Structures are given as structure tokens and as C-alpha cells.
Image (cartoon, rainbow over all chains, first blue to last red; front, side, top):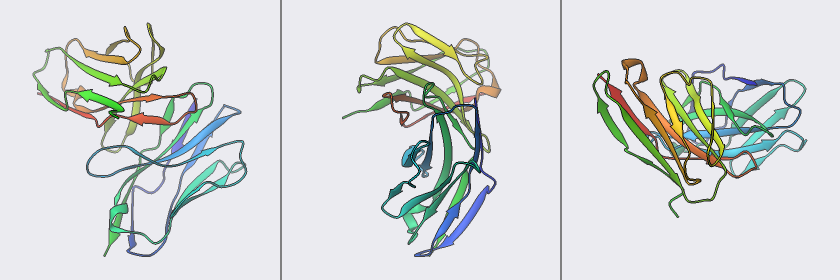
Length: 114
Length: 111
């Protein structure tokens, strides 16, 4: 079983600036995956980035990167050079490698200020 | 490439009515899921399936039933709808590396 906590219900960032979204998790699994999903107003869930827990190297996808601190059970998302299209709800999620059931946090609403 | 398709996209029901949401995926995924999304609650797992003919309960299964008669389809049923089931429902499927592919969601309103 997993729990995922996102402590920032809302955040805002100036266009072109950098913002970090926080996520902490807890799991009894020894092998697991961590994800950040983006949900724009269209409602579609879009995978932003994923991290395998056994990998020490932090995942990156273009302007998106994570800071994965396994001992602290922390998985924050950094968005660099923020764009208007980044405005959305962002969900952190955790999945056990054997169960493949995602447990989601409650989400962080990100606003981008022009 | 359709991915995961949900029907219907929108539905309004009266209390006590029944309905079925259909999820279809064309990626030959073994695992399929139904989630509900409510404001301030994130996504919560209702039921899931690890293969054709198998289903299991998730975090919030009460008031829902599911069936997986064909590998590509996962049906979510409400036998007697209640206002508390007003929500946005998402279907998802996965190949065996944890990444979920989501449908576009189905907005259900129960009056």
C-alpha cells in the first residue's frame, strides 16, 4: 500500500521562471515507480515524468526534472523556463512494481503568470 | 492509434437509475483500472483487473461493479446511482512497467 502527499494545493510562477512542486510518499514495496502527471483543463491525464526507485539518477524530460530523495521519501518536480501551457493540475503518484496500482496525491494547481 | 477510449463522455442520471461506462483499449494491455476524480481528492481507485475474466476491488469499490469479459474492454456499472457518485471517471491501462495510459474521462452527474 502507498500514500502520497502533496502539501501545496496551489502554486504560481512567472513565465520563464522555475518552480518546484513537492511530493512525499510512503510505501511498503521494496521496488516501486514514481510519476508526475499533468492534467490541463481538457481533463486528459498526461504523463510528465517517471522514476524507477532502484535508479539513483534523477529523471529528466526537457524542461522537467525531478529531485528523488529515496531515504527521505521525497519526489519533487522542477519545471524550468515555465510556459503558459504548463498551467494545469499536477499529480504525484506511486506504484508498486508488482501491483501496478497507482496511488495519487491530491494534486497541486499550478498557475503561470504572463 | 486510439489508445484508451471511454464512452460515454458525459451522462446525467436520476437517483436510482443504472448505467454502464465502457472502456476500450487497443494496446493489448493486461491491466486495466477504473478511477474516480473528485475535487480536492485526487484520483481514487475503484476497481481493477489484471487480466481477462479477473477483477478486484480498489480503494472505493462500494456501489460499483465491473466486468472484464474481453481483454480489451473493462466495464464499470452503477446498479442504483446515488448523488455521491457524481464524479469524473477515468479508465486506464498499463503494460507491465507501471506507466498508466488514461482515457479522456467521463463526467457523470447524478441528480
